[in-house]
Length: 377
Image (cartoon, rainbow, N blue to C red):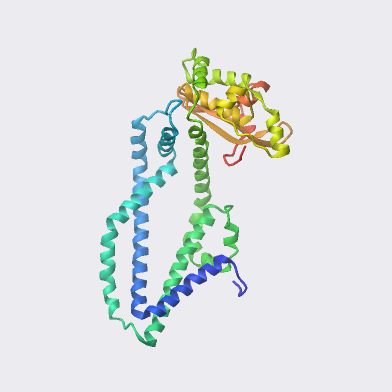
């Protein structure tokens, strides 16, 4: 770090130390020593609570999953409220996504642990701080020692802040401001000398795996948003979907019948694409609009298909990402995945492309469709 390092992260770390030092001078040796003891005790209590909550969450994750599965809460039918769909989405997410389930159990466990030991810890901290009352509290010498103790306390607080930033940069190296944090000379120095020797190898090995798993779970939750947005369906769509799938008894048969209907009855809306690409006008439409006008683009096909599939009891999701454009490139696209209970698998389909060939669970579907939940269509 140079004297010209004006990175805000550097300034924030220095400010933490400086403020603690000034507080130490103001309180004197007695108050500063007591404050340092309380900080160490609080930090130890927090770290202990985190470790215990993590152990509890890990041990309880599988039993919690089995308990949720035993509830057999079925996806709310068409025309159910958005609150019902949101409740089911949360339930299904906790049931099916290990990281989300761990996070929920960890948070609950941590809050309960801190609630349980909060008063006990506070009492022990007060008792432990009693000896520091014997330290002289006034005079220049006391304030000098208080400043030194305050500076040490500030360094501890700065290390905690550095650890939080270090975890963020390790888990999200491409995240917002991660590069800016790394540009701080003081942060780099503290991370290299204190944090990396202790946790660098572990984070280097585990952080990318954890980040990919976390991104995958966020992707699945993000795909569920249309279940809530399109929960309130008009009766016409519900009746049409039931009529189309009336002769089918299997999930595969229902899903295929709806794919054929949406793929042949809805026309691609080139005017909508032109308005967006040339004039920046995006015409948002609901499944009801698509059903009524028989026009739409990929996201409209997919939302209508999902709405109709849910009307006949299928579990379905809208998937957004990139689709092959036929010219060696990829562009923003949307399609569907429907769950076949008889085969215990998610089947991919693309009703938008139905008129160009068979895009109902074709071989190598993933070669032309790249999942990317954060791509806006």
